[in-house]
Length: 219
Ligand code: AMP
Image (cartoon, rainbow, N blue to C red; front, side):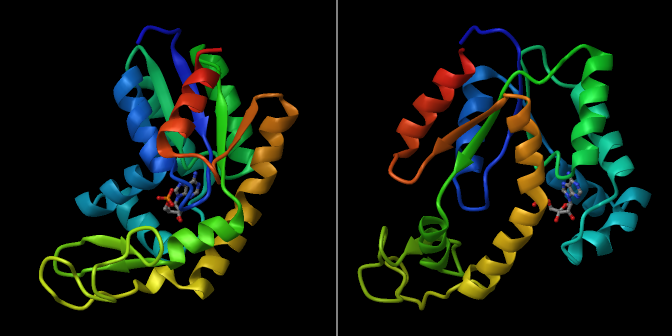
């Protein structure tokens, strides 16, 4: 698909389907996907000094300091391909948003689009808290949308299914509280710059959301 280079910040709460949509965009528009969470996890796996430094912070669910994050992002953007990039998981603070603006102006690649895939809380909760896993294979079911043939039983092996620790209401509420505290001010920052484009995905299929996203990116 030929369009002008895209410099995207993609926002969306956990369970919104942002990962699925990002993967489709990366493939169709040949974009570089830049996820600070992935980059940090890679450093930890490689046992680098940076990895050692951030490991405990990430395990505690706290934010890594802005300077470290901006260093990672700057170097990733400089290495991005000619068609542009999608930033995922960044910025998470106003400080990061401002630092990012500064870096992008310096390199001459200002943000072109800020889509926000919004899904209302009840729908997110239903999606996440209804998930069932088969630990042996990683197969995922859903109580409502993709129920196993026999209740709480894997279709292929007949083994029991489990609810993952993270997929309980209590953990969901905690994650959402953190999400709001972190991202709300940042969303406001881009809204005030008239860059934020909200897509409400509650009633839409994956394909419908993707069409809507593509429309936005081609404007
Ligand atoms: P994620 O995979 O985006 O949910 O990120 C996982 C963890 O990495 C977060 O809980 C933070 O500890 C850290 N992290 C990722 N991106 C950032 C960021 N932009 N600012 C601060 N910490 C981050």
